[in-house]
Image (cartoon, rainbow, N blue to C red; front, side):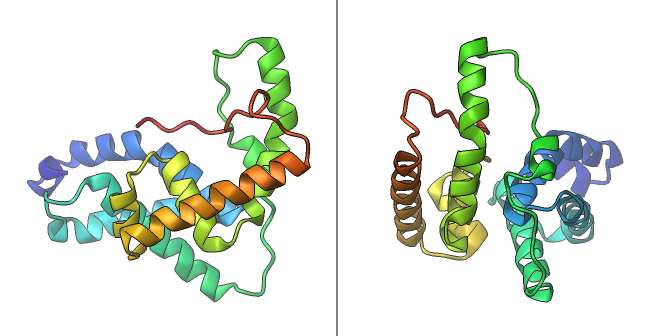
Length: 190
């Protein structure tokens, strides 16, 4: 980002390559709509261009970018409050999945059966808990960074995460999902 601020346009390309997919995935899971997520992702990067001179090195670029993306999604949701979004376990979410070469066929089969249940359980969380859960588990942001992104005290963020995890455990247990068969459909680098 410092290189982009200094006038290097190739640095912006690096930022987009590095952050586009995780930001898009976050927005897709937040909105449940592939088209909206794509539009919001592009709009987020436009805001980065327009606000580049305001970014300060004291803030991590990713934290700043996720705050922009989240705020765009919240604003969009307010504008279209009465429209129904496609559920997280719908075709748009499945189309965004990136296959990995890691798990065994048995594990992959179990995960394929668990994925719709897990995504439905995540989608059923209250908006504040879902947002914190996705920022933590999908993007790997620290609680302090999530607090900065959401404008919420860090202890509140931790509390929302705890409630989200409790609700997910209860919902998945009710559906017969055990810890042995459950693996998250997204993976965050911590």
